[in-house]
Image (tube, rainbow, N blue to C red):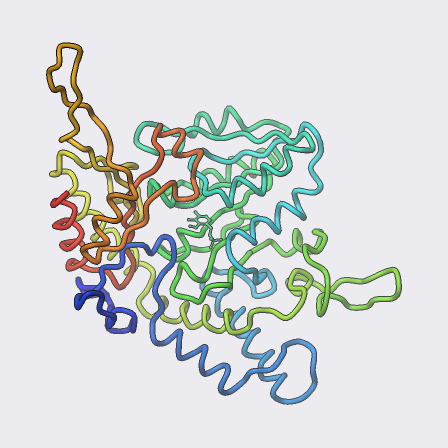
Length: 416
Ligand SMILES: Cc1ncc(COP(=O)(O)O)c(C=O)c1O
């Protein structure tokens, strides 16, 4: 159970004071803070088990390998995957690039990839790369409330659509997409289905399903350290794919001109891996399991619903995405109208001109009150173009946020 003030006691950063006051951290969509348990696990690894993995026969190296592989199993269990289907990467971005440079390499001129207008750049640019060789990139449109238009999805799904890749939860609109249904539609079409789960695995119960061929997420967005990410892949697909990077430890045998590669997942982990990252992410998974992902979702839904209710009462604030907290996660992108903006008309009279404050100005105003929100395009410029805006401010929640943070945010915002 998370109390209504959030689990701040476990997070040393909340002891920090800026200008003598506590910080109100509302940017967990960008990255999350780390609990003492994760920091201790990383220090514990270096103090007790550190050696390079998968290569030496002495006891300490064995122990390091065991700790690394145990972490892989724990993280796999968390999403209902076998451990040999979990590839460690640096982050979601690298997981999706890995797919572009392996699965994507088999695409030919005229093949199609279907993504959506609400994707993060890391689920756009790796696919855009393939347009240079004549692959066609299609985008599913949105309705006015920021839901995916499933009719548009069906109409854009062609025989040539080889890959469908969709964010489970938008990092801007908060929309939770029906990925089970989309996955089924994609699989019925014979397409490879990829889930960008960067904003869902950290925030809600998530289990691998038959329809999901690949799933990408980042450790740092779920209480783990930076520099560790995950690519889940169906084993038979991982087996067929060529390696992404080549080098140490990903081979069975090498002569002067040929190599036989290791089995997955090691085939995709060339060089010394981020063992401390795996250990830290595994500790983060334990922390989240201890709370329970249903509870994480319940808490974020609660914070979202009280925040939206307050924003509904603020006439100069416009927020984006679904109104119903059941349809969205704990991320709220918003703009503030400058109602004082006057301009002279031709007769020299003052008229009000509707204008939005720049999102950086909103974030700076809130920063002066120790309320930390993100601003800008959130690495989703095609979505900004769809919404016909240049950016938004964005508040997002996690397990350590509570009523106190929402109150501080709303009262600071109402001073604008
Ligand atoms: C939906 C989504 N996908 C991908 C990413 C990229 O994550 P990372 O920077 O950890 O690679 C983000 C980051 O905000 C995201 O929100």
